[in-house]
Amino acid sequence: MPRVRDDIAEFKRLNYHLYMALKKAMFKPAAFFKGILLPLCESRTCTLREAVIISSVIQKVSIPVLHSAACMLKIAEMDYNGANSIFLRVLLDKKYALPFRVLDALVAHFVRFQSDRRELPVLWHQALLVFIQRYKQDISMEQKDALLELIRKQNHHKISVEIRRELVHSSSRDMEDPSLAVGVSMDGEDW
Image (cartoon, rainbow, N blue to C red; front, side, top):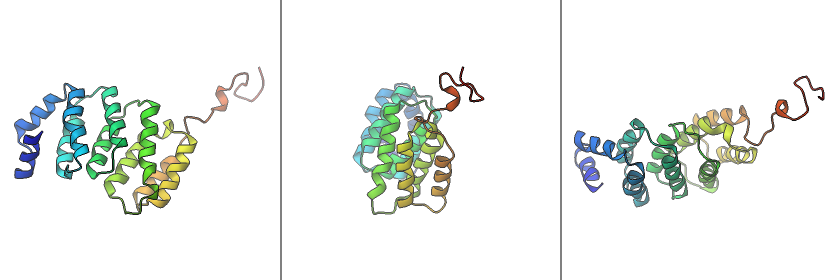
C-alpha cells in the first residue's frame, strides 16, 4: 500500500503494473478490504486522487456481497472524509442486495450530517443520491422522513431535488401492499 501511495504522489497516476497488482489483490476481497481499503479510509490522509484510482479497481472487479457489505458497514461508522464518499458511491453502484443492517447503518451515516454546519462537498451528495437511487424501496418510512429532513438542511441546488423526487415517488419496506392482504381480493371483496 505505501508503494501505491508513493507512486500516485510522485507521478499523479498509478503505474500499470501496480494497478494490475491491486486488481489481482481483489481476488482475496477480505484481505484487500482489511489490508488496503479500510486502513486507507481510517488514515484520514487518503487523497481524492488515490481514492478515485483505487475505486476504479473496485469498480472493475466482481466482489462477493458479504465482503462489500461488511466494508460499507465499516466505512459508514467512520468519521467523514471525501475519500470515504468515493468508496461508498462505487460500492453502492454495484447494486447489491444489502442486508437491512447495512442499509440502516448507511441511513444513520447520512442522517448524522443533519446537524453539521459545514457545507458538504458534491461527493457526499453524489453518494447519497446513489444510495437513494439503488435502495429507496428498502428503507422504512421513518428513514425516508429523516432523509427528507436531512436534504432540507444539507442542500445542493441540483442533486437535492433529484434525491427528494426519488424519495417521494417510491414505496417503503414497511408499507403494506393492500393487494397482498389476506382475505381481500383485488376488487375489495372478502373471500
